[in-house]
Structure formats: C-alpha cells, structure tokens
Length: 274
Image (cartoon, rainbow, N blue to C red; front, side):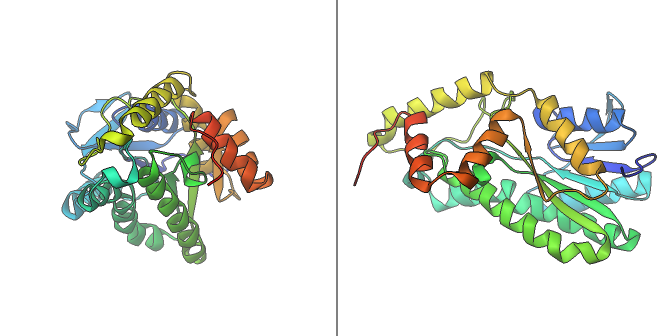
C-alpha cells in the first residue's frame, strides 16, 4: 500500500454526495484533504479545507491549485468528481447545451488535471482518479449526452495513464452505477424539448429517481476511491458497487444483442426489430 501520512489530496465537487464522502474517507485515512465547490467558504468541514473552484474557468482552477500549494506544498492525489447530469433525448439539446455539459464533465476534468500535473511531475509521483460512471461503458436512452461525457472521460483517462506512467503518475477510473446522491434533484433540462419525447422522458426521469433512491451509498464509492488511491499496483478502472460490477460483466462477456434487448427492457422501451 502507498504511504499516505502527510499526503495531500484535492477532491472536486466535495460539497455533497460522492465528493463529500470521498473527502471524508480520505481525511480519515490520513490525507490532508482540500475539497472544492463553486461556493465554498474556505471553512473546514469534518477536517476538510473547502476552497472555491469553478471547473469551467481556467483562472478559478489555477487559483485553487495555487492555494493548495501555498498551504500544503505538494499534491499527491486528485479526485475529479465535479459533474452535472442531463436527462433528455439527444435532439432536445442544442449544441450550446451540449457544450455546457462537456465543459463541466469533460473539460473540467482536463482543466484541473492540467493544473496539477506540473507539480506531480516535479514530485515524480501522483495519482489522478476520475469519477466516471457505468454509463462510460454502457449506453442509456435519454442520457446520450451525459453518457457521451463519461465515454470521453474514459478515453481521456486511459490514454493519459499511458502518457504519465513514465513520470510515476497514474490516471485511474472509478465507475459507479446508481448512487444515493442529489444529482437527480437539479439536473440540466432539455433547452429545446420536443413533445413526442415527453412521455418517454418522464419515464426515464422516474426510473432515474427510483434507481438513485435504491442505489449504493456514496461511502461505497468513496471506499473504492481510497483503494484505487492507495494500491501499489492499481488497476486502470474500478467499478463501485455490486450493480456496477454486474453491468460491466454483462457488457464484456454477453452478446451485443442480449445487452441491447436488456437495456430496452430495463428502460421500458419496446423491443423493436427495425
């Protein structure tokens, strides 16, 4: 296991849900933790120093990283958790809305990663853990743009990992499935809704709320993050929770036709042959 005494961690989107649970878990394991949110006050929460950071703005990200370095002098672990959701048919979102979603979920990951890498390279060590989703491996109707962001994070992380190993740095993925967070409470809404999708979209929103209510506790994901952060020889990706592991197994080993049919049945869509 990696020695974590005096190690410094940054967790983005740490005001609630997976981010907060992860920050607390890391702090209890011995990390000095800096959590971020767009409206952080700078006060300590459960031993975590909260800092303001808008991951969509280069200057805000750099200011946060500079402040961590001023206080702690190093950065050993980055957990990119900040993200937003969107439930909408693909054609119900304008390109502007799609860009806004990618700006948080993908480019936000890239901004914070780029800001910490010079320090990690100078140290000759570091670990970056990107919170993806099982939708980084699977499709989901009415989550086409959200799923696209997570597929992008998967490709970025895996490619980045090969680039960074020479410098003693790893880029890893944690893939939760349904998790009990507030991500469904204030999702982005389609900015150009189309009435033919109203009933199906409403069904998807209800399924999402039901899945989240019955999902894994965020602490389960946090423990997987800690495992990925501290393993001497970590895997590239970690699924978090039984349902995520099951879905990854199905995706890898079952025929595409079975996966396709199962997705439609789960989402209460007709199994068509067109």
